[in-house]
Amino acid sequence: MKRTGSVALSHEETLRQKAIIEKLKHRLKDRELTYFITTFGCQMNAHDSEMIKGILEDIGYREAVLEQEADFVIYNTCAVRENAEQRVYGRIGHLKSIKRKRPEMMIALCGCMMQQPTVIQELKKKHKHIDLVFGTHNLYKLAELLETRLDSGSAVYDIWDAHKEIVEDLPTIRKHRFKASVNIMYGCNNFCTYCIVPYVRGRERSRHPEDILKEITELVEDGVVEIMLLGQNVNSYGTGLDLPMTFAELIHEVEKVEGLRRIRFMTPHPKDLSDDLIQVMSVSQKICHHVHLPIQSGSTRLLKAMNRHYTKASYLDLVSRIKAKIPNVAITTDLIIGFPSETEADNEDTIDVIHQVEYNTAYTFIYSKRTGTPAANMEDQIPESVVKERFNKVLEAMDIVSLKNSEKHIGNTYELLVEEVNHKKADWVSGRLEDNHLVHVQGDESLIGTFVDVKIIGSKTYYLVGEII
Ligand code: SAH
Ligand code: SF4
Ligand code: F3S
Image 1 (cartoon, rainbow, N blue to C red):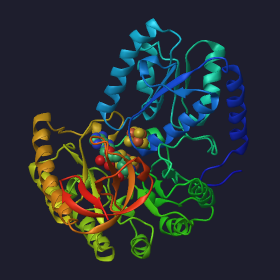
Image 2 (cartoon, helix red, strand yellow; image 1 turned 180 degrees about the vertical axis):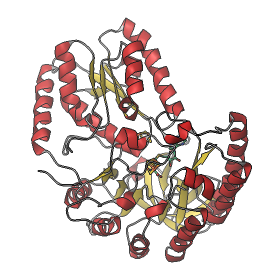
Image 3 (cartoon, rainbow, N blue to C red; image 1 turned 90 degrees about the vertical axis):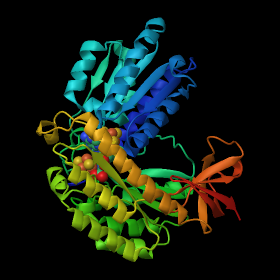
Image 4 (cartoon, helix red, strand yellow; image 1 turned 45 degrees about the vertical axis):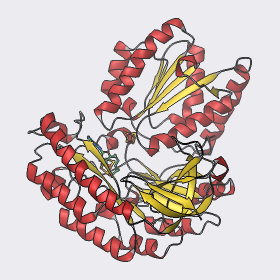
């Protein structure tokens, strides 16, 4: 079972958890039970929540319409920025009065926030109405933890500081039947100085290619046409496997899965994006021409302080190589504004990169101080008013280049994967182009999950309007 540097798969543990699910199913069968789960944070968490749902539904729980009426309320939390944490504390506070009226309501907290000892201390001290707390490494034990809670009648806290084994093949409920995310690795070794993720998700561990390919093949057999390969730095995939494999090699294998139409991946760290990957993408029929390439800052000085291991010049060079090989590629990014010691000139560097790269979209974040990270102790934290002003300048620059990118699509025809009914107009649907652009077209529910050819007839900063041809 041991596999050095990667992750050990434990089939015994999977069977054990499935047996507990069966026991609970029997034990709770006389009551109609409901759950309500709220997921904060990134796609890793969204993916974890699919497993939580799968386990609960196998036990017999059904999804509640309203949180306050649910028998089991779960928050899958994120620790990456302070406001995500504050929202969780706000929601738990609100649940206190509901639980006073309905003491049988169970409340579970899990995910990245729970991996921080200060959070656990705070919960134990001030939030005694929480029933179940677990972290990112033992999510698969949900059924067992629930059983312990029911048996003991008192709160259960179970947090591990590292991964012990990988438990797969537990039930999951996918949000969409036609697209799915697949973890190719867990954790992160990069320790960017602002970031909490390596502390809450542990060290980098790659899944074995055969396990990944088996999962994808099964998903495709189940109707999935688009796969998102997930990892904090997908470019370092495979280091540490007993038979090392690069990400470029893995994705080349994924391409061979018959019936799969689109492959996406997230996130490639700019320091490790290889020419081999660019080459594989340039000849691929399935890998989407979209690279999410978080730069964080355009200032070489700040990039060094962030421990990102690239410079403004080397990043721009990488973008040129990608654009040269992959025509019409969409590049998107993440930006942090207000990192300690940031100057006006540093912000100008970021804006300069925005204009040079012409990103399709950028997720722009205000720097959030995370206790335990090196940046939290750096001098010269930037006042909020200054950060806000710089943030607005960055958004203005992004609006200009995004609109320019959108306008380039006018008059062209593309294949659109229809994903959902439009949020505003019931007789319209929305979907994504291969370059990840959001497109709205007239159409009905029956198109969801299908590919349609569309001609682009209108463009706004962050979406396009098309008509089916
Ligand atoms: N592994 C990915 C990022 C995962 S976190 C990568 O390296 O690209 C997603 C984004 O959150 C980061 O890209 C960064 O822009 C943002 N982020 C992380 N820590 C932050 C902090 N302390 N304050 C503000 N934004 C942060
Ligand atoms: Fe955080 Fe950096 Fe790891 Fe991304 S690569 S998760 S930003 S430490
Ligand atoms: Fe994701 Fe937030 Fe955890 S961004 S990895 S859910 S800290």
